[in-house]
Length: 220
Image (cartoon, rainbow, N blue to C red; front, side, top):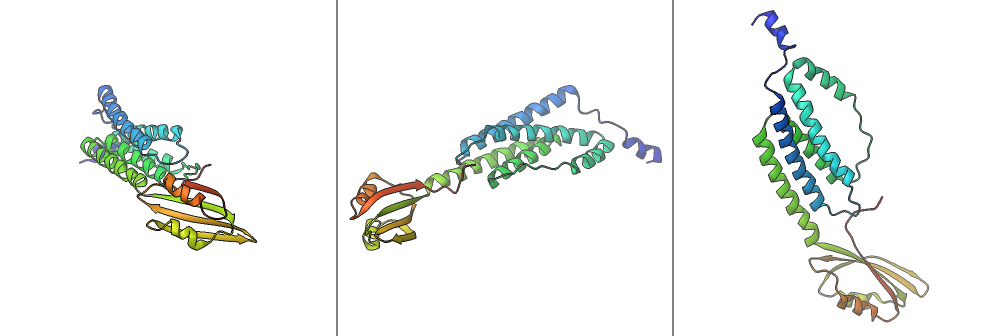
């Protein structure tokens, strides 16, 4: 290989990417992006679903495909893209680590399709989507509740007698004069039922019973 041949490699644009092929690649990328979109939508278990973030996953994947097509077409362009992308800084705060995983998933699938590794992209997308659906069901299978009891003269032994046969833990117990407040964590496959609430409301000195499902998510 002569010196001129090496120099020519840096200025030759690949002709394998015709308009028809680019369109087919982008359509395949859109199909994969929609799988990611639907996976995020139906496996989301938080309290504030963001449709704009989910749409962003689709746009990230399509953009990654375009970048890979440009990089694979010309060496000079690929070097320029490395320099251009290295100065990009993202300042958007990601509150849920799961969202970061979906962003990374979109980027990786976009790189696979852009580099024409179609089989790897399709198989990995289906496999990861199935795993995401299976793991999302775990949150519904095992539940945790926080039960807040307030009253006068509440006795811990009487409260614990109500929770016999269940997996529970007394998280806090505050007493101010005659007033007592208890926070109890109830966990397991069983869901909280009306019978348990009725038994708690019948405790001597009970004033009110509040409960909430603990998911680890926060608003805002």
